[in-house]
Length: 68
Image (cartoon, rainbow, N blue to C red; front, side):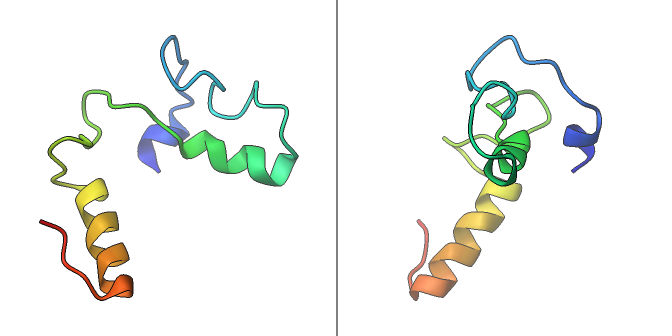
């Protein structure tokens, strides 16, 4: 939330630029404002330790599985 509130300017992936260039309906476009690539101070898909790890744990709990 803090990172998103800083209104970052993107010169990298994802190419939709936080929804601004997506052409999707506003309700969907607003969700893309939280679609960040791997940057310093954000979690890492290859070795999640923070929000990605938390999301994986919650998803696996819903599915009745454990993330390894």
